[in-house]
Image (tube, rainbow, N blue to C red):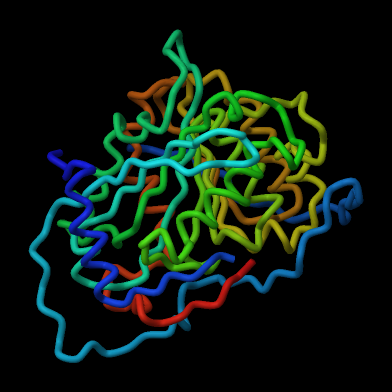
Length: 342
């Protein structure tokens, strides 16, 4: 895909600023396992940081909308563009690179687009350490563009940070964890006034997902911050069972208040030959025992490798965006404030 170069984004930024966009400071075949009736209520362990009260939003209805005047003209764009940049993280003590993919017609429509934070994996079958480039190599933008042309997928922005050394470590100190970089640095950066982005800055407009080690982080972050995200997905998530209970997604699946977890749409998948299958099954069983709705998908073929994830990319995008409108003009206007859900 011939995306625009970074230098060409200057015109885009000026155009977006000129329209008075005012983003807010943030605040094949499947085996699908569904939840079973719950046993006696599990005991919640208070060592996990108490969560704020959440009002679940099961659908994406109730958005502030407006009828454009005059009637918007059709947009004929079929390709989006990628912004590659970085922000300084006081938590990491370094610049953190990240990529943002903007879909076709993003500039023209002037709407607040929902977005997905995509976390990369680390190592698999002798492959080198990954960066956010993994999601581009898996052709996530191309899969989205095909879905848009066919009207099978709604428009969305893809946010792809580089985890670097921090994503490799089981460091859960608030002053140095990958969780803190995502929640305290990345989200405020991309949603800030100075970013020039026009994003749907509410939990209904945010999703987080990851591959392998990134899948672990996606569940760890979403389960500890369900007030921030409407959905979470892990693709062949690598669950390190040695991490402390308060940060262990399997433990949290068994012990966090069910109402917190049930406020999230949850997806986990892997191929039948993936070495992570036993721990992912344990994770799904923990949710099922408490009747927490989730999708657990075991594809009949596939190992822990890029070929498997690339094959199912369209399905992943469809899950992330299941509650978002396909018509961009049904999204809030860039000029319309959206309350901070944090």
